[in-house]
Length: 209
Length: 209
Image (tube, rainbow over all chains, first blue to last red; front, side, top):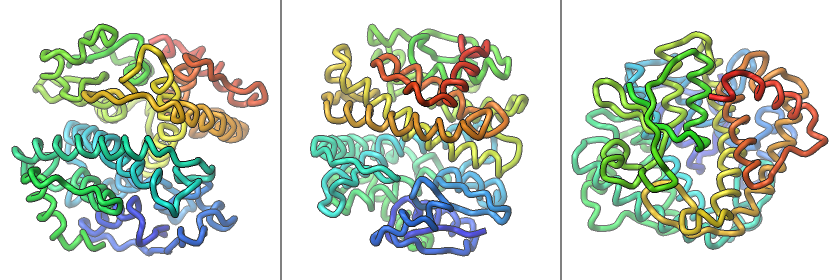
């Protein structure tokens, strides 16, 4: 098994935290996104999508998506469960995690990639170049405001995002909040439940993975 | 079990096809999206996200996401497998399906929702209103061009999107191609492998579900 990572990037960080919570050690290769290593022929042969994370299994199969890698790790190392232990629980957490990606993670990505000077012409990851759309950066900021308040209401009634247990949905939320911070988008002061939760999950050893 | 559907909408169609391939009959309720039924208090009590599909289980649990519902149906009705039969196969199909959503489904949604006159002020589904961004509609069209060619190359070497077996990735791709057609975005003539595949999957009885 070989994990293609980039220590500074948010998507592979989701997998690193997920693996750390399960005490799985992933043999890791750093891909130098800053210097365009993802566009080299050598890396395209591993993942033609030119993105990290990617997990290469021993038979040569490559899983090139953060959530799909987490699903695989959950199946081969079920304990502690970070998705769920029943079909119903897995479905609930999967639905919640996808909603968080859509309303939070992708919104934070839109805000960053359509505004950062260093990403001009690179508003989307992957093999194709797209120009930044400033209105999309602005929409991302607005969406994150709604997202923070919705998550605050959710966490007023729950210890963790999905309920009483730490899950992949907590990982996605923490990572996107840190990503939003890169463009100075921060949790509003009045979101006290979200802030309480954020402090707690950020204090877990896995947060440094 | 109760399936909240809208016969004309692409996201619940993914679930309808998935269920039809497994010969699962879902007791169904139509939600009138055109007349705003998703914003009523009655529907918000079922899904506060104001979207379909949603699957309510007998214990009251609601799974409010197309892919999460499909994952649940796969677990409770494993045959025929539409995701996979091993952890590795499930991970590969999940990664591929997510890539197809990102590069194809979301691109088609961007193209439609940021251009259709009837969706002014409603560029995203969900409880919040967002103005259309014409550049995002245009970017969606460009991305779909890349997507069609990438899928054509993939299908030059495979019977179905993921290999020799029909999967959820075929369903996502067929539904997004039909969605793209609403804004007159069609598969290029030279994409002969994609067109051969599209004719085959569209001829399956499930395509009418």
